[in-house]
Length: 171
Image (cartoon, rainbow, N blue to C red; front, side, top):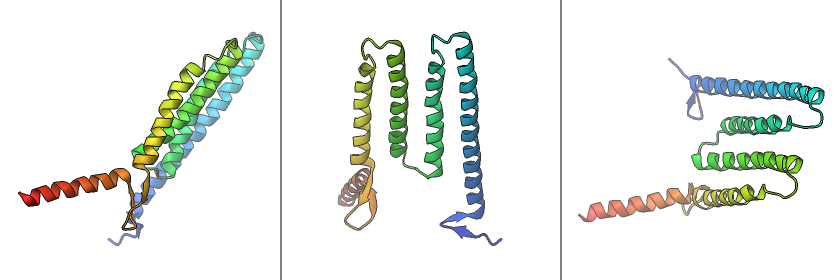
C-alpha cells in the first residue's frame, strides 16, 4: 500500500487530526451560541422580574470564564502547542484574566465601598508572574551552541546525561 507522507505524518493521521480540529471548532461554536442565547434569555428575565438588581451579571461573567477556557483550549490545540509548560502558562494567564474580570465586576456593582478584589488578585497575580518567569527562563526554547533549538531544561538534562555517562565509563 502506497501511503503519502506529509512532514512525517501519514494521510490517515492528518485526516484524524483534521477531524479532531473540526469537531473541536464546532464544539466551541456551539458553546458560544448557547452562551449568547442563554445570556439574552437570562437578561430578559432579569429585566422583566427584577430590574433593580442585576443578578444576571453573575451567570454571564461566571460562564464567560468557561467559554474563554474552551476557546483557549481550541486555539492551543489548533496551533499545536505541545509543551505542557507553555500550555500551563497560557491557561493560567487566561484563567487569571477572566476570573479577575468577574471579581472586579462583582466588586464594582455589588460591594463597591472598598476594593476587596485586590486581596485575591495580588497573590494570584504574583503566582502567575512566577509561573510565566519560570516558563520563560526554564522551559522556553532558545538556540544552543550547535544552532539547535532547546530549552534550558533540555540542555541541563543533556549535561546531566553526559555526567552520568562519564561516571559509567570511569567504572
